[in-house]
Length: 289
Image 1 (cartoon, helix red, strand yellow):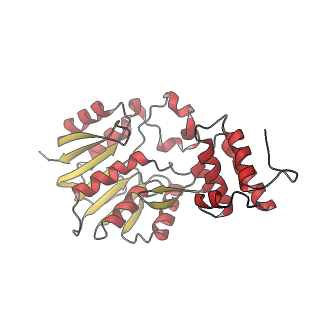
Image 2: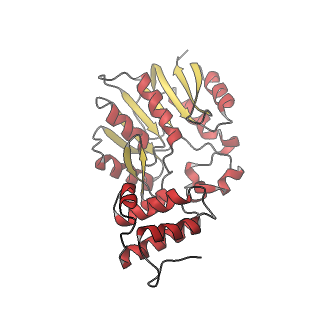
Image 3: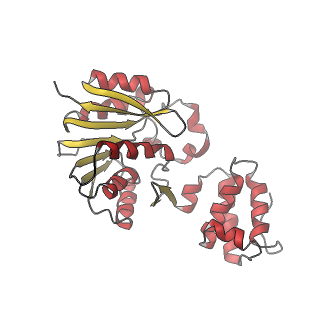
């Protein structure tokens, strides 16, 4: 495998060319991966790489880049290597204790904001918050809201708290809880969640970034529907009449999730498509009998 050593040239152009050769065998986005990792080492934006292709890396930068490149060659996700990922135009800290934020989850934010007009006070809960992307984004976009964020993982909540502090989201309260188990509050206007929804025997678990993500945030029983069924049932005891429930799910689970919500007495049950046109989020309006 081509490596960076003391005899190699260390210009930006040269190290990127070698990095693309290395990553081209394992990544469909080798150039982008290499540029993101190099920018991380240099503390620069990608525009810097194009403006200064002849700029030389010092020994420490070259060694750090080589180390990150080898980890990426082994499949480790870019977000875990750089320790951050952008979501809704904000940069969030990411560690292997939390799922990597994905653009598809921005649909949850888009739908939430459409359901909750600005300049009003709301009570919102994000179940299974992970890195806090949903809770913190909603808190920032609806500053009058009172937001609760739960997770069963102490390590994940630590990451979420750091993100809330970094992004000055002072209207978020974090609770260690398995769904609603430790949440005394009720009368929420919105319950939102990106729960585990992958079946344990799903072959996608052996592919790509998910190989490195926490299984507890990915895998659910009953063909991936156990946690969705549980949190939807519990949400009915915590939502205001006509409050909203939003659940992210697998592209092939829309019909089952709609059926679950209808059986639980939710009304106006609708599935919404993500950026790729896949059914990704199902919403329901709580209408107690």
